[in-house]
Length: 72
Image (tube, rainbow, N blue to C red; front, side, top):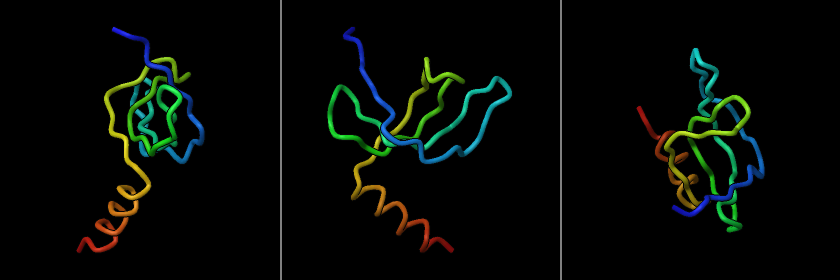
């Protein structure tokens, strides 16, 4: 399996933290040198390990915000 390279371009916030110190974060992340995308996943304390997550484009994150703002 090829190495996955990533760079956290901008840390946007922490949603929660587990008892083991892993944090669920929203960041802008560049994967394998590509343009950064919004990324939501759990990270180990020093960002040396990560859990499964989801990446969203600018358009997708804007749509998500609209959906959440219209939630009753």
